[in-house]
Image 1: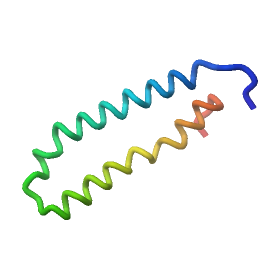
Image 2: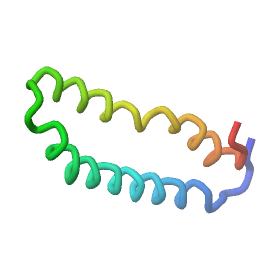
Image 3: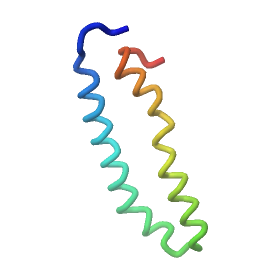
Length: 71
C-alpha cells in the first residue's frame, strides 16, 4: 500500500482526460465521413464498440496510477 501521495494520480487523471478528449474529437471529426452513408443499425454498432473500446487499457492505466507498475 502506498503511504505517501504521489504525482501519478493527478497526472494520470489529467492524461486520461486529455487522451479521451483527443479520442472523442478524432472520432467526431472523421467517423461521420466514413460511416455516414451506412445503415443506422451498423452506425449504432460502430459507435457502441468505439464507445467501449477505450476501456480496454484502462485497468492497467489505473494500476499504474496506484502502484507505479503496469501489471
